[in-house]
Length: 258
Image (tube, rainbow, N blue to C red; front, side):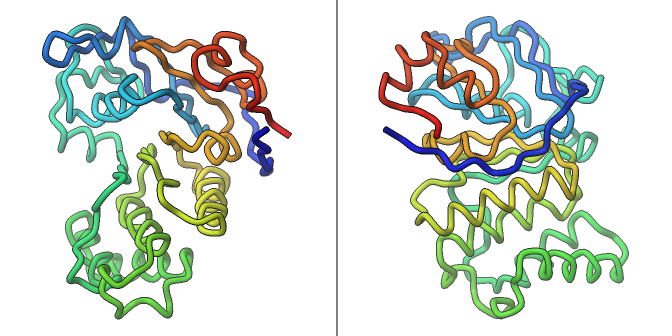
């Protein structure tokens, strides 16, 4: 039986859609990946996406960022139809942040130089660049790591750096693709606390996609379970765990929340 430690997660009495996927269908080489999907991501919530391999979790991220075009349907971001907007315009217009599962850093640059590189792209004023970098250094406790090249950082340190880099443009929406993969228990707990802080202190809408169901469900307000290109369950962690269809198609009978 899987036991899930519950964090204190900010509740939302009022839900306001920030991202809406409406009647979305997507095909890869004539194979349907997304089947007439409808999904609303609410402002300042932490949403988790779970499901077997190949059900469309990463595709949803690609649709939001513009890396993948829809075959049918519309994508509405902050009340604006973004379906046909290019990638760069989506990131700047809607303040999107993306933390990929792999990569995201320049390995031969130091931690500080990685931050500086991204900051110089997004921020024009030099004094604001320094302010932003110093804030992130303090927020993520990078003080002892500033002059270490990214290739020499641990997996957890590198993941923290990629998240910090994604925060430089003050995103309204942060997409995290498998942030808990291949990390130890203490590092996962640290990342869970960072995610919760992004919601409570920074008021960022966070969407997490991961295969680590227990770790994901420990730090989200709401979760959706995907199967065969459709959402088969949606609700709080307790609600999706107890959903009969989700149990049959994803969790099994032994998985539970304590």
